[in-house]
Length: 339
Ligand code: NAD
Image (tube, rainbow, N blue to C red; front, side):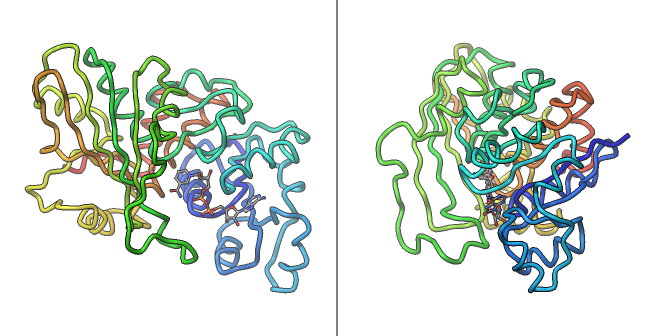
């Protein structure tokens, strides 16, 4: 029998999670929610049973002639688990208002505070901690990217301090109301940015401090990391470790990957919605100076957390062990070594 998954909030992350759930043979989408009857709601209604996230907005959908199956309160009893993909901090409100009452397991996204859930989750790093839990938070795009890379390094080498700078895309491509047109914004201006402490919710023993800057681009984030190595390593040692992990894609400037613009152009040929679920690491950026390792990676913010949500569902419902779940998710989403 397939696990029944509800998606509350069908925006950038929600629509991708819904499509990824549909690709799995052990789960199915029983419904998605929208707040307003816009073009995304019209498309959603063609693909999935559509419910209204805010019960007070039912009339708007009826007036717009969009077929709905009810409200979030009608959807939850039909599901085994809900993946909350609503905007930052709204997940916590939905938990208090609906999920606790319905007694349903819920996955939250990185825009929520860590105390919304029992566990902050990354499939590679702490799959086992989410087993059987009722509330799990999949950490944000930047934290997912940092966590995967640091996990691979710390499990294969002795590492010390991690210092990382996040160069953040200012908004997602669809956002037309806000943006940074001509400036670079320290965000925040003082250390640390929230990413370092967030990595510690998954990897508590890592000594990490991060700084972050918003840049006028919508395509991807870039991370520049410096990692103290407590044993001698050569760049090739690091490359062979990272090559083993399908959720890390090593690319080369020699192939023409001169910027995130070229990475996204490549992804446009590779995948639906040009989704890159992998950390994209420039091979040439992996350099060692004394006991310091330098790495630069790009993160496609709209896609990277999608496989993590699928694995979180399997962990919470104890459908599979980590490696089996990750393998299945990777295969269905086309995550494989391209180069
Ligand atoms: P989004 O604005 O694209 O989508 C959110 C959707 O939720 C919208 O369709 C909105 O109408 C709907 N919504 C509004 N109020 C709601 C409510 N009360 N109940 C249910 N749905 C409601 O946002 P997003 O980028 O998909 O972000 C969702 C979550 O994922 C946030 O926690 C965010 O921090 C996190 N996240 C976003 C990214 C990213 O780069 N976009 C990456 C990783 C994690």
